[in-house]
Image (tube, rainbow, N blue to C red; front, side, top):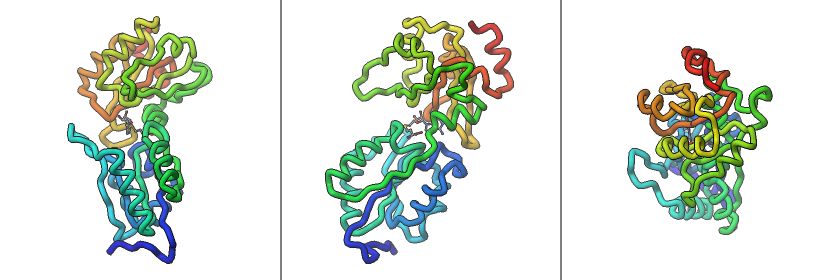
Length: 258
Ligand SMILES: C[S@@+](CC[C@H](N)C(=O)[O-])C[C@H]1O[C@@H](n2cnc3c(N)ncnc32)[C@H](O)[C@@H]1O
């Protein structure tokens, strides 16, 4: 049975980052917060194994659908959180990776604040750092990059990033949600002057047992991804740091890459 209103006048919502996939990469704080919740709203990329940290009897509601199905509308999710919190429930909004990295956590926090609902955020390890790390790629290695830029391949306004400015920045590019637009991304980068030999990789299901990856060059990344049948969810990493990948064929693939 669902517990709620445990002597509280109002509930609250905790936006929790569940980490990139491997349940051991969920933080202690996230596991504790999940264990306090009466209601758990789960996004599709969250590994269901982390629900072992939820309280027995907590109500678990799936609010994301993949496989080409329509996602639960964002406004509906926000209304649901507000409704349960107003009933006095502790609501865990469980998201893949970190709630504030391409996770709509900012929008949800704003909606909760606007509704006068108490809200907390528990950070998670984002897939854009953890998936490359699973291959041994240090995204900010100081010998190879000035920093890292996190990008989406699927911007809300449909626009392209300023690839020239990104090239000039000397940062590693980590691209979320980029697989479906890989050809356009590569074309835009080559157009902006990135060398075709720039080291690049794609990691699907990073940190999970189902992890798959390819290491290639920018010029042949799309072909390598297609050949390996990599699909979403995947992270793209572009830059010299990819040379640090501990993947059997990396030296041969990148040996002559300029
Ligand atoms: C809506 S974004 C959510 C990102 C999430 N908030 C984070 O911090 O990792 C979904 C995208 O994250 C990336 N992603 C999430 N989990 C992943 C994983 N285990 N391996 C590779 N990419 C992942 C993929 O690019 C996927 O399309």
